[in-house]
Length: 321
Image 1 (cartoon, one colour):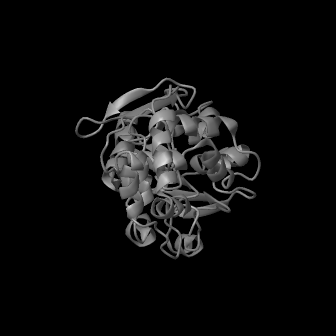
Image 2: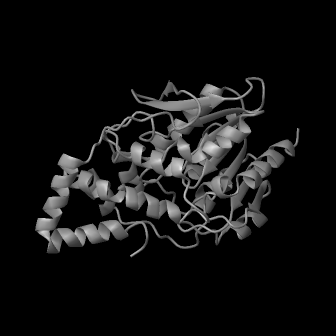
Image 3: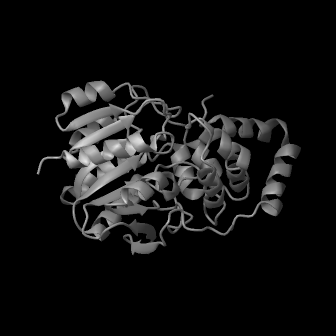
């Protein structure tokens, strides 16, 4: 039982051995949990909205000198993700760079539909943001967002000047994807909402975030995570994450090896990812470098903001041309 699947394994057991308690949890979710909380902007900018293929829209946040080199920030994917995860980078880099951040489809202030989200939909959000920027951008992506950023580079290399991948997924030597029944459970009417409410309770959010911080959990991030997870249809994008269908199998061989843009990886310890294949991969692929941000656990932009920003700036400034 790993950290990701544990709440749902326990919930499934509870449904079998304690139907009265399970029913009580469902009733509590339906009656006592507000699923339409006020949701402010996750960053110090008001959102604009761009269209994806079909009727969906994604929220973008922009700040910084218009004439400066552009940077696009891509957050991670989890039960309570949003552009708030990139707040330290948005605030620091926008002092002299034209920074755009997005809420991926199904998250934050982007449109949330009751559908099965897939890799193509998430990648389309990144591509739409790049097209809105309209010139080659330095993309900075976190965790699973790194895979969508790499796919966007594969599709629109003309719009990606470089990639900085922070604690990226896809460098683990063994497959530890959760079982697909987790997604099916969360998408279920009534029971699925109750299970998602358990996963995104305040104590649960604090616990999961605490594993990614070396010090105290950032209070603003924790508060926003609760708000963004308590919106209409908030559980559908996380359901695909929990089912494992948003991850790329053999990402080093089928995805990252296809990236042509200069790429750096920032990493250290991470409770949810490992980097077993990172050193062998970077040694065999020109244009890829790795830089450790010490004493961090997956969110170096919070625990080591200055060093993370410095690494991004130096990488951009030292690119040829």
